[in-house]
Image (cartoon, rainbow over all chains, first blue to last red; front, side, top):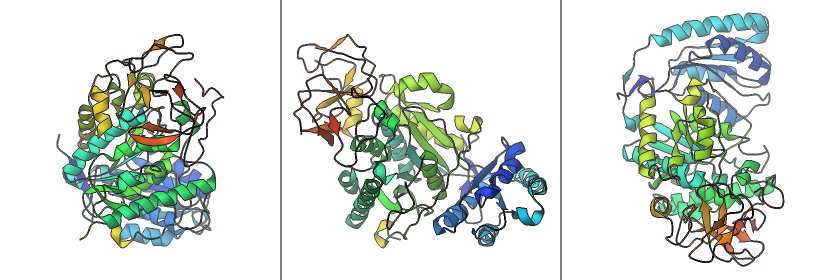
Length: 398
Length: 114
């Protein structure tokens, strides 16, 4: 397998060369979707922010996503009167050398004309990107995220520890790996902090989980869905212990927040819970909000461990679905990339499945596609949040 | 970590092969293959315990009698507190365990949706 990527002006390389169509308010969503529709299976993905009120987090997320290494060209779709700073986003994308255009529906003359103009831009960009050359790529240039969703009592004994083994192998090879959802690390904060590269970072890791615990306590529900209980998980602590296994056994190099890029290889925790008073509702309203944040941190691909059986993929970066539950795998095989339930049934070891996941990830940079990509899953969610910048102890020393 | 060894090697010799011990300090065992109602299970060499309702994959049973107020230990870590006394071999779930952090939201009935 020869890894290859598309070289971007910031030195990062993409494993996909996608055209992104980004709507800047829900009122422009339909037009964006219609623009992308004919290109649905040709590497054109829709992302966007539905809100009309300004939000620094959302604007930063959109900038990170539109300048993600997997993205080659960007079309922005604005209604015209929303608060999103479309010109700032357009300038930021243009500064990276990517082709970018903004369609303002009110100025273009409505739905029909905007769709026609947008499709013309997308078709031209798609043709140019299809002819773009690639360069060799190394595992050490990869950023890989991991998330679990639709968890059950099998997630923590097969899929998550197997993803953790893959993470160990990728970190060893120099890649940056990101695990997340501090709300699903409640109960594991002390054992996690003991793996921090420095004592100061350990305290930051503990504080991030304490923040999540306060946030969820205020909201009255933990990061725990009804189906988690049906699948045998009894408490958030039990779910957390299983979820924590995704992080593997490497030392933890840093703590980042959505949109922060890992400065080098190593293992990073992504703190997804907003800072300050509780004011925007649930931190991540579903799994895809977490996936979007992992991608905004530069993830080329995301490992998604499921027990109950999630089917989602994502815009911009491939999602590798690792099925922890052998009964679920047999029911939903078409949606799954990895059958980690073999571990529970004694048909494979954790190391074997971990190596399989690693090879699959490397293969994504060598022409391989995930099941969710083949099924054209391109879910995307972005909601209101607010964050303070990370503290000085959160990143490895220069 | 310890639990991976448990997955590979971890059935205690005198315990039902469908049950998995993740860590030596655990007071629960994980169901690794669905156990139908009406069967019996062996736990730690004790007398066979009848299974009153299906035990689905991934659920837990008590490895030993657990007192009300005692911590439930899985992966070698506390995952909640027993709300009532739990018999050896009994299903351990939301009907007899509570979180020490936030309450568990579920759509299961009183018998934990077995």
